[in-house]
Amino acid sequence: MVDVKTAVAVLVIPNLVMDGLQLRRQGPLGDAPRRLAPLLVFTIVGTIVGTKLLVMLSARAVTLILGAFVLGFVVLDLARFAPKISPGRERLLSAPVGLVAGVMGGITNAPGTALALYFVALGMDKREFVRSIAFTFLVVKAVQLATLVWYGLFGWSLVLMSLGLTAAGLAGFGLGLRLQDRLDQRAFNRAVLVFLAALGTWLVVRSL
Image (cartoon, rainbow, N blue to C red; front, side, top):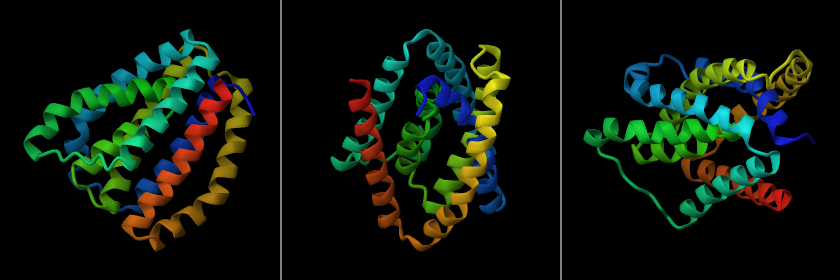
């Protein structure tokens, strides 16, 4: 409906609201902040760099990058690419993974693909996975919002649109939570994969 740069900007507030609700629903954070701190630091740095690239790149280039990135994640999943990361390597890999996720998040508003692959490789179960994604997104999206305002990509003209999208997102959020509770791990993964495949294909076709 709109160009990708506008879409990235107006989706930040809905992301913040829904990730905040998701995180609250998951209960106590436990050791998540301490465990994810190194990852978060580099994701924040990558987000600032990626947002600067969003300013510089054309809307068509950003759309193509987003579609290709999402489809790449789907292909890896279909190829049964399932790396396992030992606890000893988690801290070592948090920097490059966080940087890549942040840059992609800044450009496309979609850091979740890299983070999802990383969290799955760490052996997280569904509940821990959702909690880690929500916590990471909440911190990163707050930084992204500030960066978008700084670069002039999120003016007052977009605030009403963003608030409207927040209301629309919340209307479907309850249904999504119920589905999350009902789906087993395999069905949960399959549903996410099908959605990402359709989204990635549409974005690539649109950009070309």
